[in-house]
Image (cartoon, rainbow, N blue to C red; front, top):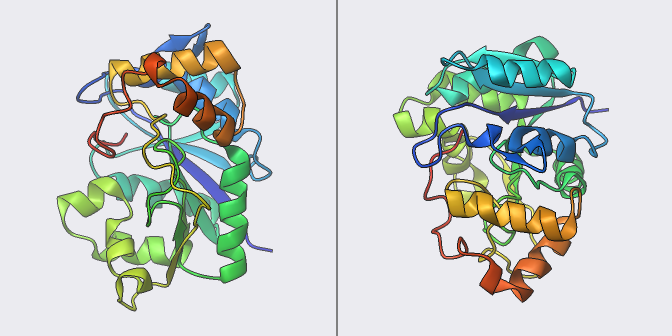
Amino acid sequence: MAKILIVTQARLQSTRLPKKILKEINGKSLLRIHLKSLSKSKYYKNLVVATTMEKGIKKIIDCLKRMSIKYYQGSVHDVLDRYYRASLPHNPDYIVRVTSDCPLIDASLMDEIIDYAIDKNVDYVSNNLIEQYPDGQDVEIISANALQIAWERAESIHDRENVTPFIKNNSTFFGHNLFTSENFSCNQNYNHIRMTVDEQSDFDAIKVLINNLGFGRDWGTYTRFIDDNQYLFKNQQIIRNEGSKL
């Protein structure tokens, strides 16, 4: 049976909304909400938070210790190196990449994508090679071999900061043969829906969702609420992937 390791990245500084993952909704930080969302996964017991050694990072570490969650502290900017080194002690077959600026990540969707990757036996699977799912429900599955090759060969700042571009751009999905890859498709296009956090208006949107629907709902429920109540959300016009990742 394939060994799965979930690695989520978390840091304090961000260009447009510093310390965003420590901002609270109903007494819970976005980081805690994110981790609680992931806790519904059947693979949750194998979870590591890839964080940094920034000034003030103790607040993140203290949160992780209270939740008894493993963590690794590495490079702020070379996130590919951070992921690779965070995974090494666990010797996984596949690494699942998610990010803590996605507090309402749907663990059931994540598990479906993980199982799909295992079944297809490919190096890389994600639900955003073709962007059909809402921004904030992004999941990437990377074989340990692919992650190591990317770590060894990727040289550009963009590839190192964003972890997976080297793998995606050298994969079969884009006509190359260094890695095998597949997209996890959706039966409808929801890429106009936004539930990630890069700006204050994003945080306000997550607050609206939680205050109206509570924690732990599936991605479809949150999506329908946004679609049906656009007037409540000022963030839906933000360009997807415009902000930097954690």
